[in-house]
Length: 255
Image: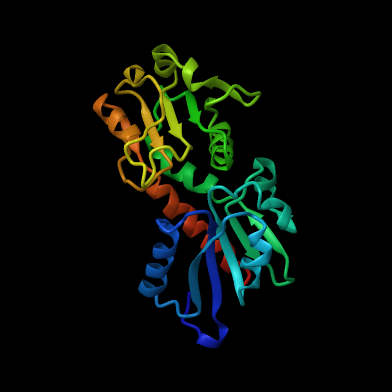
């Protein structure tokens, strides 16, 4: 994007809870510096409840776009005027565009980021997946797996209509049968870096893919366990970069 005057500055940011560790603020600060983008700023909006979106975030001048992270990817939706078709289908968003008419439109760029990150690593045996966690991020992952014709089951701490398995019900055989395991839960993220999803890791083989949406630390205990078994391990960094760039394109489309 071309250099513009400061009086046309547009403000972007990330909405979440306890997000001081976040990837996005540094990523966009570096992007703006490296590409000489002088008309944009990016900041964290660390809010303790979703009601603060109206009370605090929307009071920021010249807002042009926002990213949304845990735990607000679903609860933010009632505050928006419109949803992109895919975001509506998924029921979770991570990107908001402020339109020229002053409306707030929600998108999900996690689907783009995840698909682009995992697709190069898929092989013939990768037909079934376990999704650990049932929050907003897991909805985007399920959407992509469906597009890729990969059968999947949700795993949660408690039995529910959505979750096929609880963690306690998982066996080595179930793990062995599902050659892709994706951690969509926050378990293992900074600062609780010694934690890991409680699954029977002995069922993992060298034909598995373990994908952790967490990027801090870069190698979680979940991924270390997979690596020890010879599995392909991927953290969430590339997915974040892809989704961030997709968000930037959405914010700048039509300008």
